[in-house]
Structures are given as structure tokens and as C-alpha cells.
Amino acid sequence: MSGHRPSTRQLAVRDAVFDLFRAFGTTTIFGNPGSTELPMFRDFPADFRYVLALQEVVAVGMADGYAQATRNAGLVNLHSATGLGHSLGAVFTAYKNQAPLVIIAGQQARSILPFEPFLYAERAAEFPRPYVKWACEPARAEDVPAAIARGYYTAMQPPRGPTFVSVPVDDWDRHCDPVEPRRLGTAVRGDPELLAEMAEALAACAQPAFVVGAAVARDDAWDEVIALAGRHRRGCGPPRIRVATASPRTTRCSEVFWPPTAKRSSPVSPGTT
Image 1 (cartoon, rainbow, N blue to C red):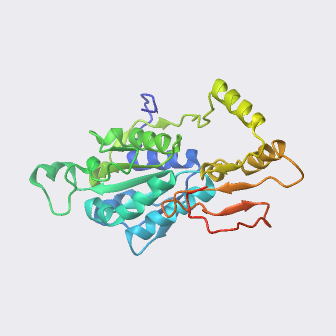
Image 2 (cartoon, helix red, strand yellow):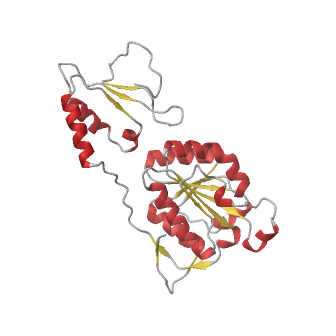
Image 3 (cartoon, rainbow, N blue to C red):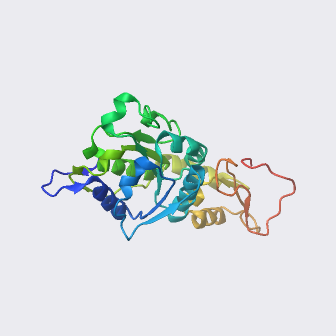
């Protein structure tokens, strides 16, 4: 699951998790906590920032935008089943946006889970599915850092998206071995043979048109698309590119034309050519 190595230097679960967050470059947490989340924030580190939302949808929405802007996973802190339930509409949107999020929700203490305590999460890892890439409630407190590390790695691997970890309230003060962060590869390359076929087809086109999706924005590939269109330009006119997305299920704009002065003769519905 992660770079776990037995160690004589044990840490509180809370400290091990914050060390991972630092290594991942994620020191901003968006949330709306309840009582089962409070031990996570005992002696809250000075180099972290907690952005409090008045409602869970807002917390997830802010983390979604933050993740897209920073190109790193957004951290979300919610309250057990109730808070997660309130947030599911925004979790769905983040899933469709392919926004990497690590959502951490509290759970009642392990010792009282057999008695179905008030506000506990029954089958917690199943609740946000299928709109998270991966979900887990670790079997032991000692496994919490490794589970959160896997949640981060899974969220960041294309296609990106939210992950979920449920953490019982009494886990944060337990001690565990530190988890060393791993280097994550996120590059996805096209098949060389298929790319060669596409190049041949483009070279044979008399008037090629380029219709691209939101992944161009996610991968910061706009300059490359313009260069590709320019290489295959026919005649004296500028290359024309249309960004077609599945609005409103993505935050990426649905009607962008290149060059900026390009005009369309008739309305075009989002997501069509």
C-alpha cells in the first residue's frame, strides 16, 4: 500500500499523517468537522491551514477547485456518515471533474462500533461509492497512515478523482511506524502505433478540424494543441480548435474557439462538434 517500514521510532497516528501531508505538498484542509474528527486537530501544526465551511458541499467544492488550480490533491475533512452524506452531490461533481481529493471522515470509537452508536457510519467504505476511486476503513489504527497514503496515490493517478478514508475517533492518538512517501508516476502515454495511424490520417485530410476535450486543460497541453493544428493548417486561414466538454458535469469551459476572433455561424450545443 505504501512505503511502510518497521521502525523503533513510533509516532502518533496524527503526527504520521501530517508528516505525509507535508511530503505530498498538501497543507491546506477544507472541512466541516464534528466530534469524531476533533482528535485529528489536537496540537494542529502551525504550517497547516484549515478552511472551515458552513456546509459540507461547500467544503468539497472548495477542495475541488483548489485541486484543479494547484494540480495536487485537495484534502477534505468531514463528519462521519452525516457529513459525508451532505457532501455527496459535490463528491459526484469532483468525480466527473477528475479532481483529485482525499476525503477523510470520522467514525465512532472502535470499542463501541458493535453497539451501533448514534451517528456512526455503517459500512463506511461503501457509502460514497461509486463516485470515489477507492475507499477504506482501516482494520487497525496502525494502518491509517498507509491507507491515507494509498488514498493520495490513487487520487493522483490518471484518471484522477476522489478517494475516501474513514478513521475511528480513537485512532489518532494510537502509535504507529512512520510511513515513508513514495515517488508517484502520473504520466500516461499514447500507444505509438495508434498515434502513427492518427498522424497519417491527419496528413491526408484536406481541411482538418480539431475538437478536443477537457483533458487538454487538465494536462496543460493547450500550446501543444495549437502547434498541432498549425502544422496541419490548409490554405491561408488560421487553425481552428473547438473545446468540447460534457457540460455541466465539468468545470472546464465548453465553448472556446481559436483564434479568439473566430466566429461560428450557428449556435453549437456544449459537447458537440
